[in-house]
Amino acid sequence: MNAANPFAPAAYELKKGRSMFAARWTTQLISFLLLVPVAWLLWMITDRAWPALSWAYLTTDVSGSGAVGGIWGPLAGTFYLTLLCLVIVAPIGILAGIYINEYAPDNKLTRSIMVAVTSLAGVPSIVHALFGLGAFIATMHMGKGMLTAAMTLSVMTLPVIITSTREALAGVPTNFREACWNLGASKWQTIRTIVLPNSFGGILTGVILVIARAAGETAPIMFMGAVTFVPIAKEGFERLVPYGINDEFMAMSNHLNLICKDIPGMSEHMKFGSAFVLLVLILTINGAASIVRSHLRRRKRW
Amino acid sequence: MSQHIEFRDVSVHYGSKKALDEITLSAAKNTVFAIVGPANSGKTTLLKTLNRTIDFITSARVTGEVRISGEEVREMKNVYALRRRIGMVFPLPVGLPLTVYDNVAYAPRRMGIHGKSDLDAIVERCLRDSVLWDEVKDRLDLLGTRLSGGQQQRLTLARALSLDPELLCLDEFSIAIDPVTTMKIEEVLTRLKAKMTIILVTNLTQQARRMADKVAFINDSQLVEWGDTEKMFTNPDKEITGRYLNGDFG
Image (tube, rainbow over all chains, first blue to last red; front, side):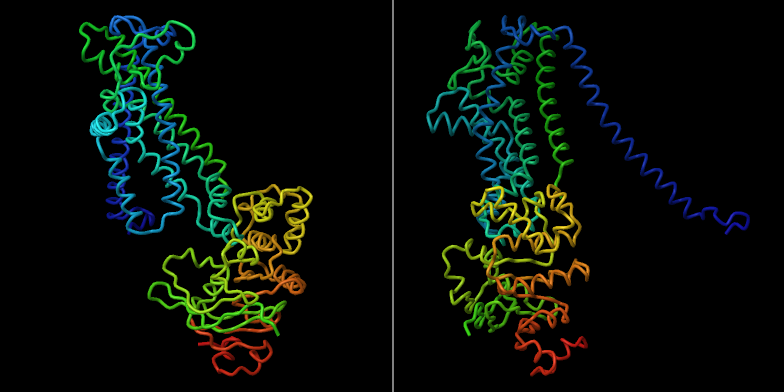
């Protein structure tokens, strides 16, 4: 011990201090490095897309195989495709999540359902595409088009929504359910009045993540009726809703894939313009999910 | 004398573990029946066989007879109607994530009572009976989960009273409540006895002595003995009963 300063650090404390310092700064540096690719990507895309971007770019038809004109066709296609997918997957996924968390007994069957859900989440999207082709087109003899594409996306996103619903429901304490059962409320009354209102935020987050996923995928839709070009009406209702439920359609992800790969002499601006719009669309949806989540967390009721 | 609540040879197993071993006892209408015994001796399990919330525990197996007014509860078709006849208060206070008002009005609403004046009357009566009214009457729109532990416990009691049950089961209701409020609730319970039978599971043997007409002592899943309160405290058949009730057990 140092007589002059009884509080001077001992040798082992100095060593501990140095390793603490090293650990802190290494982890911090690595974390900050993560920002670099994100910032770079955003800058690169925005910079190159900028000249192409305008309101007209969003609302004009694709022409010259995407070399000139705008992206109205694919944009509308992605919107309706995602909407259709959501209409199919949200009720199925949420109801399945409710069953698994609230009703299913803890037995082999339930556990195998959960294994199936987890496995489904791990299947690559191109395999989902082939499944869609085999199941809906070859076996069920449905035509290629928006409906079969949306159904394929639904199968792909089902695990996301089931898992997030289940986790949201599991976040509601069992005490609340037991209190309701003790009052003579049925399981469904308990779910409707206590469980669902308090897990709404988590379920909604799952739904929004599904939107982002469905809007961004290419593989599952390119065998299922997403095509290079579909002429669409110039005005009227069919301008706003350009595709029927069984029509072939354009979509942002597929459009981007095509103009980057198959069309020679495509200007950089048009490629990056499409990429920018798709990216902003998905980031906005994800952002909305975060806002909803944090808003609902703030008014958490227990 | 007709018995309101009857247990006959009731055994409960959780998997291979025995939680209750051939319990036989009965409580007359409009009496307070206290059940005392150390932790983990099966007291709560016994209450759960009454309103059949034990059905939710998949590993639980119940044998024997559990009767309310002579009717075997496990033969009742409408388990919800059964639960509405029984007010249950478990030791952990649970304020539902609803307002204080909606907490108390929850069960009546599920029964189809929606008139504002009807609900207002129920809410006030139950909150008064659970000695919570004065503390919350000006903030009935506060979330039940925001109340203190003791207040939530009384809110749980108010909810249990909201359907005018014929049987009230209180499992350690006073665990989070201060002695003064506990005494007030005990006064209310003494008054409520005219309307309902009360089963009181308690760790406070003096509370059992103050309140109960009959006392049962359960130890290690078995009913040691039961009988009139005075006899149980002053002249029990088994030595262990006297030692437990007088506080020099073990």
